[in-house]
Amino acid sequence: MRLLDYKKNPSVAVLMQPFPYFAEPDTSVAQILELMKSHNVRHIPIKQNDRVVGIISERDLRWMGNPAIVLPATDEIPVSHVMTFNPYIVEIDTPLTTVILEMTERKIGAAIVVSSNRLAGIVTVIDICRALGEVLDSEFKHRH
Image (cartoon, rainbow, N blue to C red):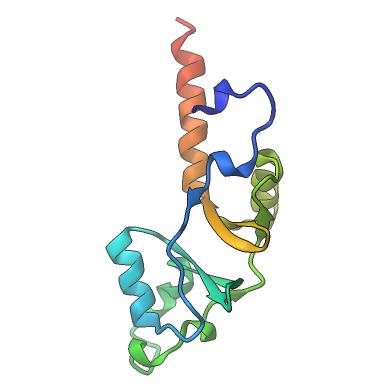
């Protein structure tokens, strides 16, 4: 279903990617990088005991490619050492506009979506841009 098909402000659920890949705090950075690469994702929620405790993004790991930084091997660094704690988490019925405006205000690339405090999905700036592109394309195609 397209955004324009909704009669009222839809919830974040319409754009979220359901059942996202996730990792645990002791997952190595090497494993995170492999997960991102193999599934073509840029954000990974971090769960501990079925509760979301953080998020790691591709951008969070860019500094690791800097040759001036001497690091232990990436398979020795747990993601808990580099992840963002207390990520932006929203309930599945949160209005989409609320989520978009908050992500913009915080200048963040993803929101974690939960249902009854359990990981349900993730929505990223890419998901939002794709939907906006479809809305604009649809609106302007009808105006010749």
